Image (cartoon, rainbow, N blue to C red; front, side, top):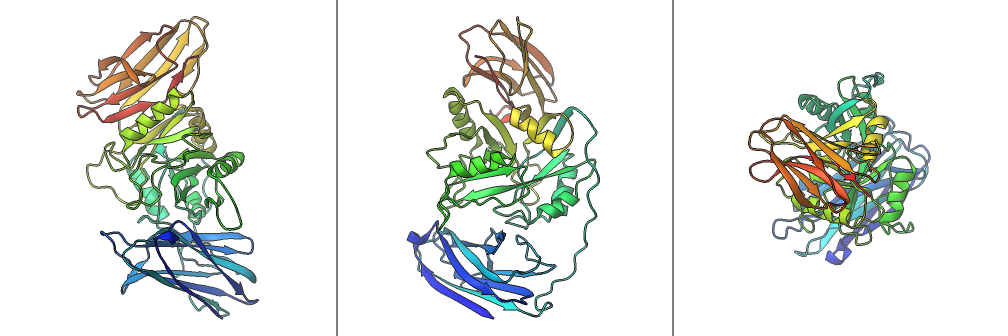
Length: 459
């Protein structure tokens, strides 16, 4: 049984969801879906259409990536049967009933009309599209038991289940090569790789799960969730806002993180910069201020940090995170920023609980800690608030470069600075007029961030 759809799109059809409903008959053993669309090259940019698939029970996956070159266009193919699926989608029984495939129009150029053809083939032959067998992974060994410590890792990464080049195994191998304690898979709009990722956890590298909510107007990480979250703002028949999506993530115990808010956006990287005027930051508490390797890149991390400092000055108590946004091997010599988290254990729950509290710093190598105490015997670390009273800040650092500078920031301004000189420590006495939040930056000779603490808040 075959179902066909075709049409033509213009730039006015960008950032829409085109729904194609189809029936899956009883006895269907395999689905073969093919979407072809015109390339539409315009100033080097092509049309970007992706596919999401839904069965009667919910989402079966998504393929957030450019299709393969095919003549004057791009071709997306999806194969699903009981035991195999194209990366991004879930295998399993094919329930009879009403299914839908959705064309998500992330970018439609103005070069020419974007014609498309979508064909769905439902087959009763189980071997019709059989792919080679893959090794089933054994259940993951129990993780944890290392206790309270600093754990270094990555909260943002991709595989070929969306637009990455790594398999989950290669992502974990890369994390091991970076000597990370944890690594997180956050593929675009799909969780199809998480079962395999979970099975790859080991005592040296904890694997964690999530999803990058890749909306048309900004990207956000849903960390700690191993189920699909509907990312579609104002989807047909399901009116949702970014606020309701964030609330859903948090209600399920996940962390909602604004990703690379100042990254280059439309039309080069569709939806990559954060443009939700009602969530700047709104109810969001966590912001990824260091994205994609080097501090100075097209994620414009310096701008992201300045915006986050501005949000702090508005009274929002924020948590800063970093994420390599790894899609494959980085160029040799790339300096990567990781999250260094003070957690109760090497488990996903403990790591994310610590991130939620802001008990972490971001670093490409230096270790830096910011603590506070006052004359009422109160103690605070990064992410905490300390009560009223005469307050002393303590800064300790090591593993810094000889040209690094340690800077104490209050309400966005530098109020003290010290040459890092490899390692050292300092104290600073606060008075009532010196600010409501304090953080520490370690910057190199070029002024680029090498380490950044989360703030301590003073009423």
